[in-house]
Every structure is written in structure tokens, then in C-alpha cells.
Amino acid sequence: MYALAILRYRYPLDTLAPHLEAHRAYLRGLKSNGVLLASGPFDPRTGGGLLLRVPDEQPHAALDRVRDGDPFHQLGLVQYELLPWLPVIGQDDLDRL
Image (cartoon, rainbow, N blue to C red; front, top):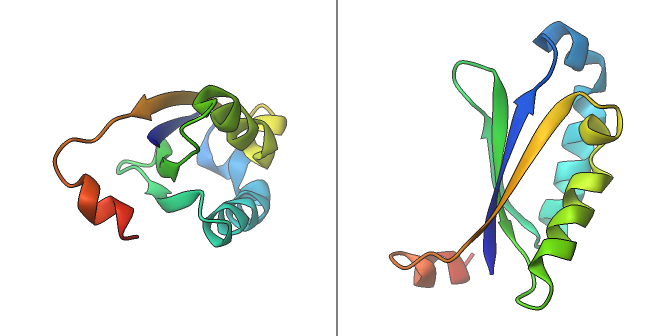
């Protein structure tokens, strides 16, 4: 199953900046484990988005683990919105990633 995570900054970017590298290191770990397919900030920079691949069994628990492991979330710097997603068009392309 796939999912989208929308992260909304709770504070100005300069408040998040000291923790940005820890957040990105966490995301790189998710990428190397095959959970994260793509990520990046929104424009304007009010937050960011994650495209995730999670197990079909208990996807909500897997998404909670993604959120709970993020230093941004642990520090209360972002609000996470987790959306399980069932793509119809383009799923074959995603499956090849």
C-alpha cells in the first residue's frame, strides 16, 4: 500500500533549521529501507510531503511508526497528516520504484 504524509510546520523555518539535518537523516534511513519513495518541501515552504510505501497489513500502525520516529514530530515542530492511498493510474510505475 502507498501513503502520503503531509507535514505542516508549527513554527517558522528558522526554528526548525537546527533540526533539519536530523529530520533528513531520518528520511534517508526510511529511503534506504524502501519505505520512503520521495520527499521534499512545499513551495512556499510551509511544510513538506512524503510519498511512502507501507505494508498492506496494518498500514496505519506502519504510518504511526514513520511519524513517531521523525525528530520533527518528536520535538513537536510539525503536524503530520497521514493518508493511506490506493493509486489507480500509475501504480505499476510506483511498484517498479
